[in-house]
Image (cartoon, rainbow, N blue to C red):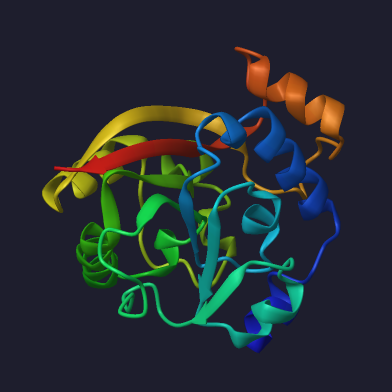
Length: 210
């Protein structure tokens, strides 16, 4: 895991700019202040650090993430298939960014089964994922990608594992901050509002357990 973060995913301060803007202009409308939020595979914690909620939990099997967390964020070093340290029914908003393409389908199914127990009755699973339909040229530039999902296949996979997709945006964001688009809060806000999404190769979806 340390080698992966050194080689493929080194720390980049531009991610903090991106996630602060994403929280302000998109995710803040989806998360109630009273919610318990879980960031699965949190990486450097850029998403969960910006969340405003009653309880914030960051989980990753890479133990180096803890040094990057903001005060008040709970840290759990574990696989996303092992959520035993969380109370059943506690999670109102589960989030994962660029995570499940790194897992086998068996591991993804196990993570979903574990998460079903931890979500509150109205809890949601929120995923930001590379969309293979639009990102097929770059998809395997990351040597740890082992599974392929388009917006169609991931919706079917979630349905087969006890979840119902309630929102799907096939083209939501560019694949990486290394794209040609500059990382600036004003431009990110404008991009989110625009019906035209140049270089958008990541999908965003929301799902609930059934």
